[in-house]
Length: 356
Image 1: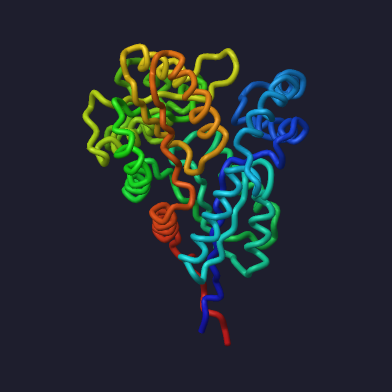
Image 2 (image 1 turned 180 degrees about the horizontal axis):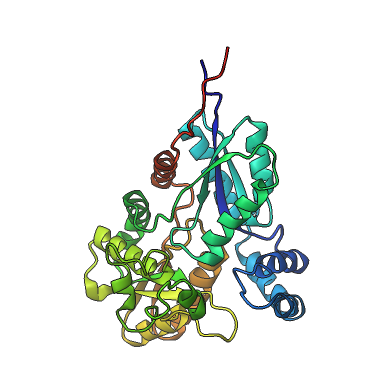
């Protein structure tokens, strides 16, 4: 008697251009920014904004930025993603593990097809975003469901939920940073998360009255049992930072939270990382360490935006050394954490006995 079921794992990150060139970056930006969960305006307005303005004027600048971080093996995000996939696969043994990207290659479609070809009818989907946002986790879940809905034989799907407070994630990120912190002995540690438009926060608030309504709204949203905090990205970022600071035994007056990578003229969640970096330098901070705990792999936003641009801004404002803490990438502690997340989620689907 056999259940006949086989489990596979699909790791999904946001994506990357195929090359550090203007045409490749333009294609990537168009796919990324045409997602209605990323730029949530009318389809016609979004098409005009993305195709005639953003992709036209931003692509050359973004391509130059990608060229600064592009390695011999390609995009850092893809290189680290492949390494993580291989090491998680080796650790899990019998379960096939493949990589997919929400935008660009390899695609979610190709990842699901590869698992199907390997005989997997139960797929554990791992959106590699620690904190929940509709524009990342929500978009990825929707894309996976869209890929399977037209199939006659649909796979069983299990989704790893946001792991922003999972002990294995926190311990892995703390372990990655300790050597740098010991070497640098920073005056201050900044936890810089990817930003989101403020109106995304309001849309995620089921009460319609809580989000960004007070200075401590995220502290109250993150309290145990709070309904409003279940999908509040900003509140989850603060939880991650508090847990990391506690694990690292940082004094409360020596760390803070900020948000990077804003785009456009709308208000984004604050404080802004670029502003905060300059403020810290002007306040007398000489050695600054920056964690980016919204990214599980080093990419353009960590290596170039923080490791290069913010580092120069810090020095220009009077600081001496800004050090970027490497991301989790495919470090042993992160591989172990991913395996733990997968195993916790992979409840085997119930099946009827196979008649012999």
